[in-house]
Image (cartoon, rainbow, N blue to C red):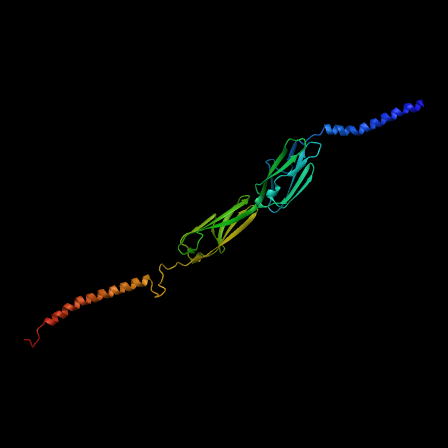
Amino acid sequence: MGGSNSYTPRVRINRTMNILALLLPLVLSEKSSVAPKDVIILNKHTDGIISQTEGQMLNITCQAIGGNTKGNISWINVSDISSNFTELIKWPFVYLSFTTDYKHHRKKLACGVAHALLSGHMEESVTINVLYRPKISIKRHPVNELTEGQQIKLECLDTSNPSKTNITWEKSGIILSSKPIYEKNNIDTNDSGIYICIVFNSLGHEQENISILVNKRKDTYNSDSSTGIGPLEVVMIYVCVCSCGTLLFCLAAFVLPKCRRVSRKPTALGK
């Protein structure tokens, strides 16, 4: 009996110790929970920029640093930049992928971390640098109908990254200018045609064209719809009438005195 009584407390002590051994790590872990201390974007440059060529897939990874319990990590404003993206969250990382467009250039992406032990949330941002070939638009002055004798100005507007290295205006294979603005005075119908602006940068070149039509100069008068006689014809008739009247007056002034002298001579019968 004595041996049995001395054995029972030991068993109980051992069981208690085993239970404590199981509970102690849980208790300690609850007391030593630590929040993340920072958030970083892994593949950005030291200047806070990440670069990719237009049309290529951009992959960005954000990571919560420190802490021993899970929180929430996500990209904050990616939907404002692209509607077609893939986001994968696997604490302490969040992965983002999307195809770049030139419209993403200089846009900022932000990654945020929230945790129960943080009073607010931590945030880190990156600026997207998209490399793209020139994008071109053309402005024409004047914008209304063109007539012979007018001036025309064509302006080639472009945006590109890297910046353009060269620009040319061409018509029918002939280079007209190497400046963004092409101007010509006193245009005629031979200036009608397709004008092409070509812009180059280190990634390649793009071109944009515009069709120009130069109309013949219109007459400065309009014929009367009923008679077919216009102002110019009226003037010519007036000049003709005046000229004829003057001629008749001159003839009358010259001939009439002669006639009078002849009529005054005495006749043979009168003698």
